Image (cartoon, rainbow, N blue to C red; front, side):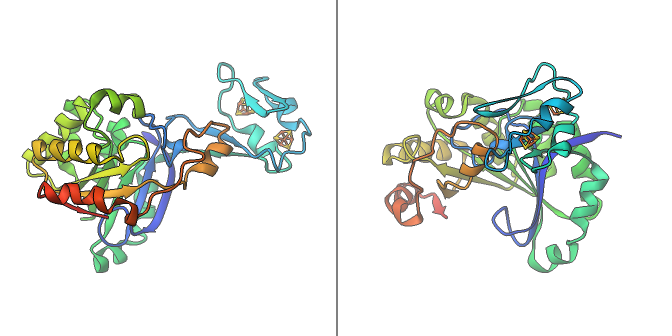
Length: 298
Ligand code: SF4
Ligand code: SF4
């Protein structure tokens, strides 16, 4: 039976689409956004987390690793990716619980069972299930199986998507959802690449296609300081939204919620000392969209 890699199933979500929802976070993403709030989502592999504050330097992880892939230095635990087979024995052997892991392999049925536990709440609140990540379309066959299984139970389905998927994959999967929460990050392809490691042409084409097909699409802009937060940026994105036929957009002010995750993954966080944005900071930014007759809201 096929398994997918996910890193969380969050119940009672209220920010990932209408009503009360269960959000299933897929692991693996084609983008590498510098500000990503879920850095554990970027790699498709199961990852080991290390908490230096808990580590007693006992070296148990090093001595018990069957692959001799673990080492310890002043900087802390290190797992050699060429030899590590992700057996996670170092995690279970660590007496100080300094090691943990991010990501699990789950079957469709295991995820459906969790989602069905709150079906009554979906029905009373107008909610459902949202696929998030990472990028769900990065595991297209598993996503398709999961969506088909959930549809049998008549559950409202949304996906938070980067829109970065091959057209044949996107055109097959996108119409299966009741709602696309579609990230739009920059109108300028070179600057899009600078922030996310991919250009934006494919994303824009997929967005335009989905809207033209009549799929319910809510474009959302993560507003990131120094990347897309100027009034000029707002005007450029508003023009892009007009071009693809969208009349609404949700603004998502930058926050620092992911900071601690970078530390545990032993990764540098490019936005470490960048101040969070709030709705009040973006009043003029929002007005640019309103001036373009695009309903912008938070
Ligand atoms: S086993 Fe755990 S506590 Fe011991 S050195 Fe390894 S990470 Fe640190
Ligand atoms: S996951 Fe397994 S192979 Fe990799 S470092 Fe830990 S014990 Fe060694």
